[in-house]
Image 1 (cartoon, rainbow, N blue to C red):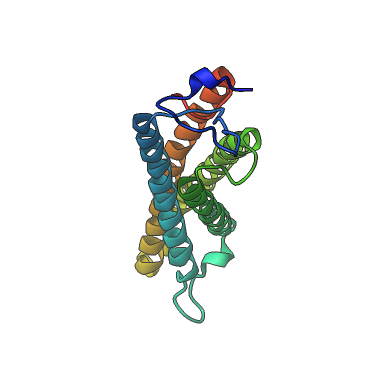
Image 2 (image 1 turned 135 degrees about the vertical axis):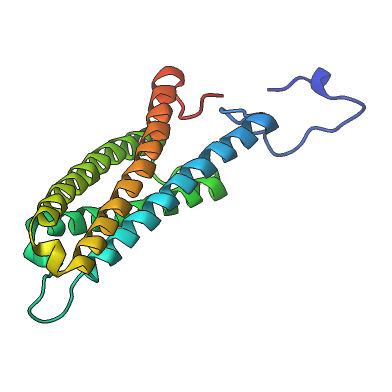
Length: 195
């Protein structure tokens, strides 16, 4: 119960109890937090764009009847599947980031959200790296034979799709670093914020 000494200048006590915020943040720390969350959103947007572009380049990499098709090669199917999965995951994470920026709370409970982001960022980054590495090995093999001399456009588009996948990996790796930072902050402070 509040004492009457806490009243100043003749104030009357409020009929509504005062709710204390257990996680007080100053205006400066809230601005830093919004910048941090915005940076994660930008990295996730870049991951989505590059992975989706890789999917589109892979899907359109067919040169008509009787020519080469991307789905004839296991490594290119792997590149397609990995980039499609990562683009869907990035779309979900962008929505979660927008939710967090606009509402100031995570989509899932904080402990689950921190570990979900970090774990999935790691798994999908390794998935993307392995798929693009397999695609690169196949593309180099095709380049060494007669395939790229006969259908140069197929090889160029394959290289483009793989390069876009590697760019998606780069931005997913940066997102993974930031989500790893959040995990460390959560372990040390009990909150995903370092403030």
